[in-house]
Image 1: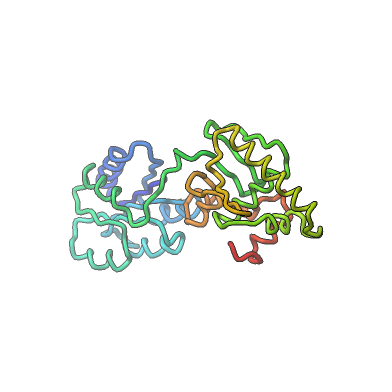
Image 2 (image 1 turned 60 degrees about the vertical axis):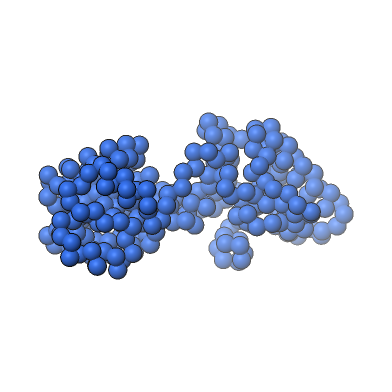
Length: 264
């Protein structure tokens, strides 16, 4: 979780920063005295929550919030002020919260517990999945997950791309073997790849990452920490990490990711 704070009064900024650190000691917290510095920081490094003093010289907090919403519409904005007349402007921007000074740990905790765009922890994920750059899968301890067959790993990649939508063996074959006819031999080959994939997942205790039904299967997004899924949720870190490369080793992924597949 990345949190930014701004107040053009040094003492007030220090009090705000201390209160936020006490309320969320495990967060990445950065403070700025200048509105432009905070805005540039959000653009370059992302931001999940921004605590903005409203009454500042130059660009006020409401104006800054409008600029931040252009960077990330799902950024949580929490206004901090000693002037209650700004409450209407703050609510018009659909702010996540509103704190009257003096700022305390308790006030910050109350706002963090009721964010407009909740930040869902992924610490309990069975697997961490990397889609940006080359596709890869990691275990909770950070080590690479081993797939018995590379094509089985590609089947899992395609399921991840479908983001929980059910896929038939025919659909998987069409993506992985585009120019080959779908006959009994091809069907059996896909079934073998699926079996190998499930076996590899079971070996690391992650069999719940895939659900199966009659002639179809899908990933369970709820047990995956996936940069692609975070990107779709406008997660600051994922948006910042995306460098225009998606599952680079698979020819079908680039074709589908750029607008030709209705699952994106």
